[in-house]
Length: 278
Ligand code: GUN
Image 1 (cartoon, protein in one colour):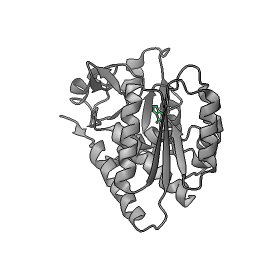
Image 2 (cartoon, helix red, strand yellow):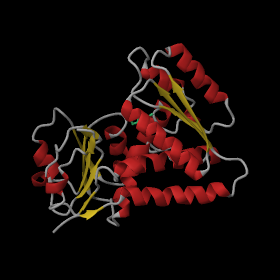
Image 3 (cartoon, helix red, strand yellow):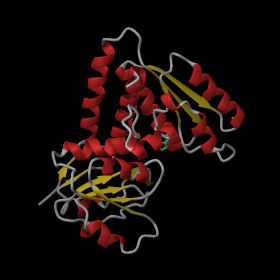
């Protein structure tokens, strides 16, 4: 049996089209600002995609491309300006930042109501406490949408999250828990990763290691969500060895065309929700 491929590109496009239809009826448009410091190649690609999505949907959009030499004080001043700007309903500072800028300080400076990345502790705290909020972590929320698209109910499933980052692993764990999964979080110090992954009805792989999860580690019929964005000879590759995994899994996301487009669709959804003050 070969797994069904979860078409993240198409699912994301449907979400963007729904938002576009809603925005078309508005006289004042939701506004998103993106801040990029420096010239990290991957970040440049992400920021360009976010800008393009805004234009397609009809959001008001600003992109602030700042030089690598921007000081922390200068960046914090821009954040303060965006916090005050009524045209801007949501904004984000693309990570990673240059070494001389304190990431934590930057995250804390963003008004939680405009924190469409869901990185501010006020918003991650709400997530942790299960308090309903219009802003959800983009990539983890995208993973949940992809899992739901299979039609398989999440409740009572055993989920294994591989990776414990603040951007994906930890918030994905919270969302799976909220959806009544039993969640195991694995990481670089986990004993016998293969045995743990083999238990999982749902696998979310988010570690940044090419092909770490192989077909022999997958429970037959499992849902496999690959968050990996590794570049191998200029080609985007996931954390899952797609060819072996697709022979065992029930559903699997490709890289590219799986989680990536969903992250941006969820960012657009968060911006709309911030505008509507949901
Ligand atoms: N770097 C990698 N992923 C993300 C993201 O979702 N948001 C921001 N701001 N930076 C990132």
